[in-house]
Image (tube, rainbow, N blue to C red; front, side, top):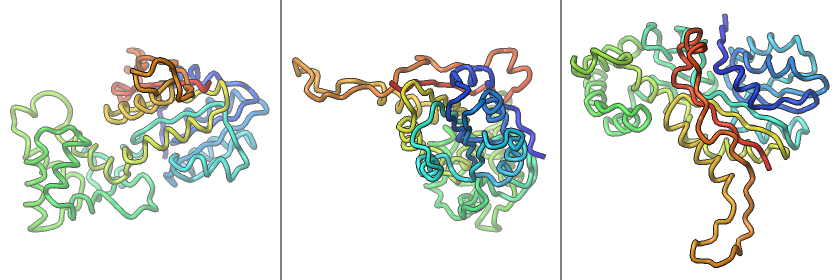
Length: 309
């Protein structure tokens, strides 16, 4: 069963400033927790709910079926939002929500291979249609490339030791399961560094998941395209769970909010560049203590919001 606990639901809905006749996009539908809250506020408006996970499409689609023609469900990646909307004859929207990262269902569904707590084949694909899996990354990447992925995407300071031990183990037999990989990672980190903080495999699993799904590689352009699709006064709200994701979203919003780009020595503006958005959140919104009691996974969540000018 696709169980979904929507992160920062109230702040997200408030941020979108939903109009009953507006057109809205949930680029990461998941179990339709956010989507259903958007849809129930529409009268003659429309919601386009996108997800690349076929399990989410089935579960979220069933939940949204209660809203009839107000909700359209599309199996795709949010990076293709422009094409999705164009295919539906939609030229502009009044709000976009993107909840990045892995869903509660994907973590809890053992067979998907996202969790270091559940034994399963190494997979981690958000879309089952793609070819690259965690098995491929772990068993075919060079030691240097593995170390770079683990360090750059997981910010893991023992990345080189972990990569070396992965390569050593796979030289005997392929590494096939999540718990097998988790044990290699755990053994690579000094005991003194394992006593406190999160599970020792957390950063490495996160890094491999990001690599498998190219989560950061397409994010800048995807956010930029999403902003372009907004009507005047439309809002975009993005939840991130990782400092690198948050940095990319912050950068795109800053680029879109910037006016004149002339060199500072120019006495007057000659570029004519106009800002496209205004920042609604100078600093990201974070989950409050009440939500953290209900949904501990919201602890690292950051919500940034911008409005189209």
